Each structure stands twice: as structure tokens, then as C-alpha cells.
Length: 232
Image 1 (cartoon, helix red, strand yellow):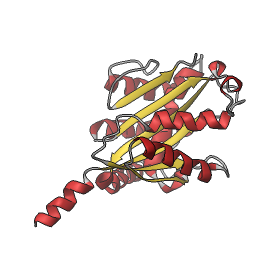
Image 2 (spheres, one colour):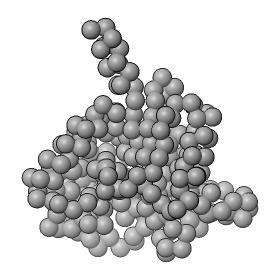
Image 3 (cartoon, rainbow, N blue to C red):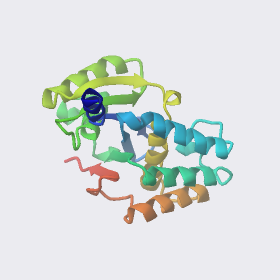
Image 4 (cartoon, rainbow, N blue to C red):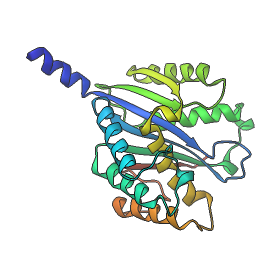
């Protein structure tokens, strides 16, 4: 019984991060780029996945969860998804930067280098040295695998607690899809002067009601943590 208790305590100290990006292409015409992550205790991933599937089934929602798919017809589903997120131990963090401030030449780097530096800022936040972490990134391009290995090495040179860091496809994980959905709300606010999609506005209002603050500014919250980088 003692061994089982020890195993349970150990498993409680493992966390999964599910990371995605929005408007990350250099010349996509959007003023901001964002990276976001959903954090879940490892031993709760199956429970969250089952619960989100139940919500999907109740609403007869058979598609992949995406911010771009938010519409009036699917609004009840997406609002319940927001309710579920705020009722659980799931956490969300976003890192954003205004593209006009980016000067890669001054730092002798490529746009892709900046992309992975931002991933470092996204992941390297509130890391507990007594825990271990699995990090899953949405596949970006054919060079991702090598750079992900490098990112893992850099993170572990600081902490030594990242036991797995790999690319997966969004359809493989509902929590990855949830990350896309929540980050899309932040991106929609910052990248669209005219907010004409009524359903998306209602989702944003629902999130802000729970947070009790605007989603447009940096904060120090744990549940929904926003960090908008100011490059000099």
C-alpha cells in the first residue's frame, strides 16, 4: 500500500503541456503572433479528454475543436467548453509579440529562431523543480523535430525536468485543440480592429467574465496567464 501511495504522489507531480501557435507566419498580414499552452496534471489527461468528448457528443459536434470554427450554430458547444475549462484544474498561458517590433537582423537570427525563443518563454514559466513535464507541440514544418530537440536541451540545461518534448498533430489531442481555441480568442482581440463575428465576441466576453479582467493586457494570473512581450 505504501508503494502505491508513493506511485500516486509521483504521478501527481507530472504535468503535460499542449502548445499551439496563432498568426505565427512572418508575412500573414496579422500584427501579432501568439504561442499558447494548456497545462494539465498527467494523471488527469484521460479524465479531461473523456469529459470534453462527452461535451462534444451532447452537442453532436463531430469536428476538430478550432477557434476558426466558432459560429452562432456552434456557440452553445463552445460556451460549455469555456465553462468546463474554468471548472477544472486546467491552466492556460499565452505569449504574444507585435511583429513590427521584431528585428531579427539586429540579433543575427532568423524568424524561425525567434519562433523557438518565444516557445522558450512560453514553456519556461512557473516550472517546479520537484515536478516533471511532458511537452507536446503542434507540428509546424519539416525542420521541427531537430529544433524541438534543441529546445528540450536548452530547457533542461536550466531545469532538468523536461522528460519528453515532441511534435504531435492537433487531431491527436483534444487538449491541444482546446489550446488552439483559447489562444484564438486572444488573437482575435489583438489582431482584429473590427470584431464582427458575434459568436466569437460572446465567447471572449464569457472568458473575460470568468477572468474578471481584459484579455488584452499582460497579467500575473495562474488560470489564464497572458504575457505580451515588448521588444526593444
